[in-house]
Image (cartoon, rainbow, N blue to C red; front, side, top):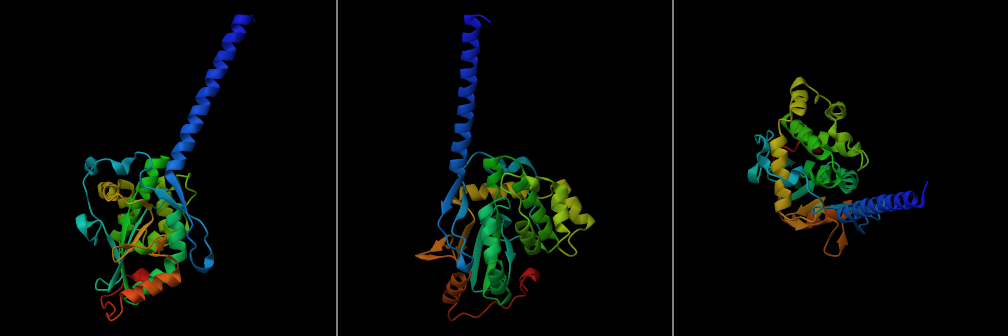
Length: 277
């Protein structure tokens, strides 16, 4: 091989290294924009770092138009544009609004630590929860798991089993980079952990994407509200994640905050959701 050929090979190798370096840098920068670390110590379980996903990261299905398909709200959805999935007594004196993405690891941490407390507060009529579904990780990491799992959760809402299925999804969440929730078969398999949920109607709903347009609309609403990331948790309209004032969120503090907010008010008398009892 001559000197000229050696020079050409050297230049080619240099260009390839430069391209690889640029791609790695782009990936690192994208990841940096997607993730933040909040020093949120969650109760006695000592979760010292809760990773929250920044809403502004990357484009995605949730950032587009909700007009890709018909907007079919799940049964019992409430609130503006029927985007809230309620749990607990409708007349409970306090409301917890939760925006989550089923692929979001911080959402799973929040749910797995706070679940029993939230269920106790809803069962006792102290708290009503409004769940809203976001799909920002599909936009930032790629894939379709946030969207497919949100549709499946809406199908569970049709069956009156949203909260139970919601909990199962977070208890069985794959690693953030594993788009396992994009597989409808996996979502139906997990639904088998909720007694009575897997029926021909539920399976058809999941596989047909009956609520895809509604999921798009919910994701678009999340973007339009300019929330910082998921989970976004509001108690009576005030942000409480990762903290409220100078106090970090924890099971004990949530109970205290709800008790303070409900002072002098009667518990809700409407029948709580089955999952909270």
